[in-house]
Length: 213
Image (cartoon, rainbow, N blue to C red; front, top):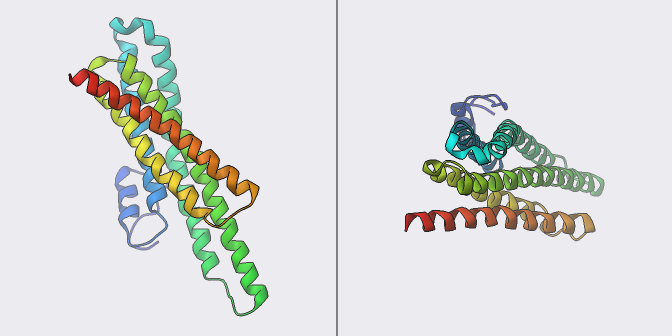
């Protein structure tokens, strides 16, 4: 990549934004979705932390402590998936540049493309799995955490759902045309995970609507 720093999981947000904004394809939708999920996890961690400090919410202190720990792990894990997504796309780009003059070269090129797409699919499925956890933790904190921060927890779920839709469609796009059992199972799993994160989104939207009156 030229013109922008190569981000790593510990890079500042500005580096991620610059890498995604650069006119290169590696850090793109998949990476942006993972970064959005990390922001959602950070919001969950914040609301759960506030909840654990308020005596009024003593009944959910144990749940809040668990949410803090889980959200912190997710906040650290998701940027790593952003890097892995970029690496998978770089592999696909490399496959596209392989020679294709002979039948053997064409077969090797197709196999390399398929490996890269399957690798990218694995990253997106792992991303979806993490986003489900973010969304469900966010819903729990919106329902039982500090009432004044319910909108912040809800934002975490909204970010997770938006990122989940991106990841879900990425899986389907990567596996378009594939008919083997593994591909079918991956698509079905992506749909199931997406339904779960969207269910969390529906839950926080219903909660916000109820509290808005």
